[in-house]
Image 1 (cartoon, rainbow, N blue to C red):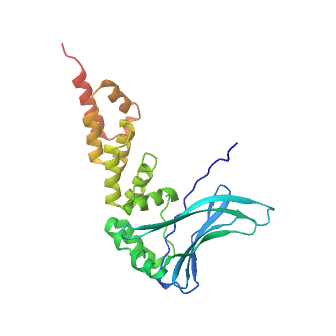
Image 2: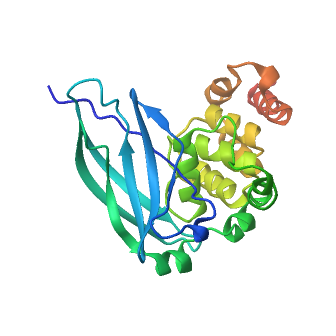
Image 3: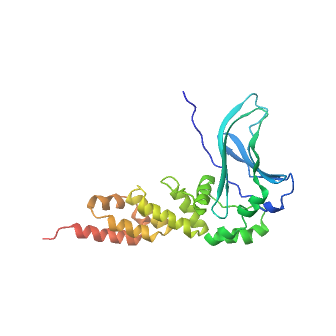
Length: 258
């Protein structure tokens, strides 16, 4: 029987990376996935940026091994990305693996250092977080945000094609929290042009995230009694009143008058 594939995403923003000294390092916060703790290490080695994945399975639990296929990706403020993929078996005394010469430090400073400018141009909330809140707090926390959703949101923000049926709701949630207009627009366009979600699902997202174009597009395509019933078969108190009114008006137009 083939082993079950298990996937997870770690996302880390290395703060004040320009002040990192020779042989210095920074760690992401510990995250527990499938009973094991993981973290990412960012360090400077001579003239290179180094990236490592750390597995912190307890070493006092006897003999163990974990086969991992992982991808380390760096996102730039210009939309450029660099990533490397590796397969590694973590065993008893081997807890980390990565690339000591992931890229030239000078290249990282030129193309990848996040100074807030790109994020601020996309998101008013990020502007506050990076320029004001970060002055007083050692860490930036977005409450009730899944790390996978944040990862896909960042990819969307940087121009990558990360929106699909599974990720769109999570990206919309974070884009709404951060008032990030471009990801909101991209998600709305996906839901209008490419998504196979039902009218009910689309209208729920449109109501939750104030996507007027999506709402109007759905209403223009709902024309039969069956389609109207499929949308109205839910708690009307939680629906957009304008949608309920438009659907009831369509219902009346379908009733034959003698």
